[in-house]
Amino acid sequence: MDETKALAIVWALADGVNPQTGEIFPADSAYQTADVVRALFLAGRALETKTKVRARAPLPTNAGRRWSEEEDRRLLDEFDGGGVITDLAQTHGRTTAGIQARLEKHGRLQMPQQGQGGGRGRIWRSAS
Image (cartoon, rainbow, N blue to C red; front, top):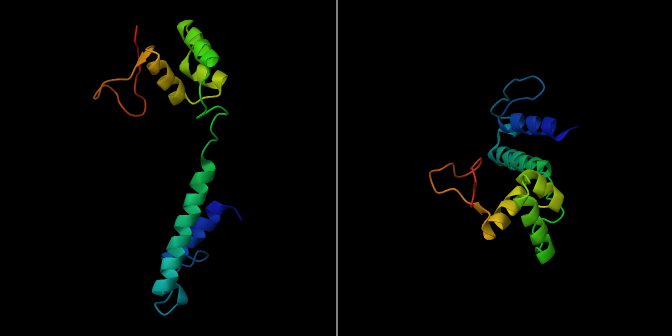
């Protein structure tokens, strides 16, 4: 059984509904007791969390590692030569945020000012 189906069953039970028939359990059913309902909600949340954690993409191989002087020079040369941030991230095994932060540190990019597209999808400006 896949986790999505299991999660649907757990939530139905937590809501007091028979997942196979759609009928509401009688008030004296074991599924309607407070402890069972709480346990089912905890199980549902745990399954959701487990599914979300597994769905995350793995980080690039060099994410979080120190930058060597050589890699810094290469990054700056590639960027100055017209390199695109997403391509540079892939080439260097870094995240796009890591590339942007490094370019900002070296004065090649400026982070947008507040109110100028901050957050996801923000537009970085060339510092030159």
